[in-house]
Image (cartoon, rainbow, N blue to C red; front, side, top):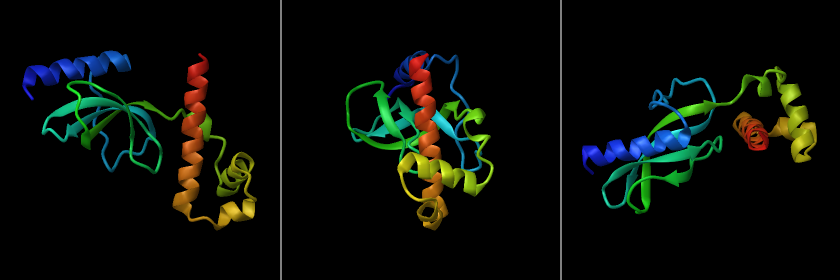
Length: 141
């Protein structure tokens, strides 16, 4: 894909996301939990393009909008988050017991059953719920 086409597709993605420039790339050291991002993607036809992706915490990012020529996506090259989980949503859950109580209420499991789950599963459930909650609040605005 030509540089001009890349720039046009990036401009479309920035307009869609309503942001002025491409944010900093997500790295393994990134500590903030992201909700929405622009992703650089590769396609099976060998081209690269941009897409809007949503975080499904613990799973691969979910592609919601692709820019450029239609072609199947072969992978995500880089993620540039522009929306993050609001601290107010998780700040009141300081202990594992508080998180387990929330998960028990939301998912209908006993707190004992929640506590028996691997930490990775509890984190995935907790942050997935908070990300979904933030999205629902935003859609009502």
